[in-house]
Every structure is written in C-alpha cells, then in structure tokens.
Amino acid sequence: MAETLKPLPQRNPPTPQPRIDAGSLLALAMLFSFALIPRLWILGFWIFSYGLDEAFSSWLIVAAGFFLAPWTTLLYAWMWAINSEAVAGWEWFVVGVGFVLDFVFLGIAARLAR
Image (cartoon, rainbow, N blue to C red; front, side):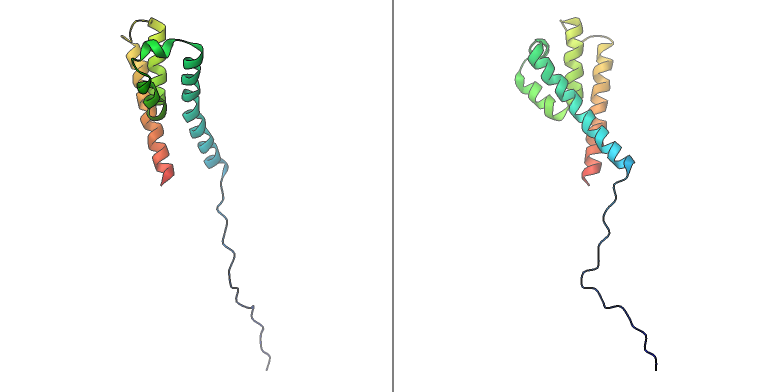
C-alpha cells in the first residue's frame, strides 16, 4: 500500500503582483507631463511677464484656470500677449484647441481614476 504524499495546504497563497507594462508607464508619464507643462508656463507668465494681469481681470479667473483648464488659460494669455489688446480672429482657434485639450485630459484622468 503505497500512499502518495500530497503538499500541505498553504494558509496564505501568494497573490500575483500587478504588472506595469512599458506602455502604461509611458501613458502615465505623458499624462503627468501634459498636465504639468501648462501650469509651469502659467507660473512663468505670472513671474516673468505682465501678460496674465492684462489678459484677465481678476486673479480668481487665473487661479480657477490654473486648476480646472490650464491649457485654455495658458493659450488665452499667450494669444492676448501676441496682440496686447484682445483675442481676435485666428487666435480664438488656438484658444479652442486649448479648450479641447483640457477636456481630453480631464476625460483621460477620469478614466484612469476608475
């Protein structure tokens, strides 16, 4: 009567570690950098230029734009600095591109948060 030996049951079986592939890491780095770049430019405008003071009537608008819509805020201030009087003509197209970029990055961030 040969009895076969069975392995002892484990109390806490090892859980597989989640793997982060290079594509996910690259996507996360790009999202972080695209969220950081306009904010750094806005800070640069604020420190080294007078463009934000002239483009926006209140610092509250700039603060809200800094957190909620940084690309739109940056591109509006940039287009204002080009003309120095108003945003007009083709400059609104550039501001619109910033608006679309803000929505794209908000959507990506919301999807990653799930």
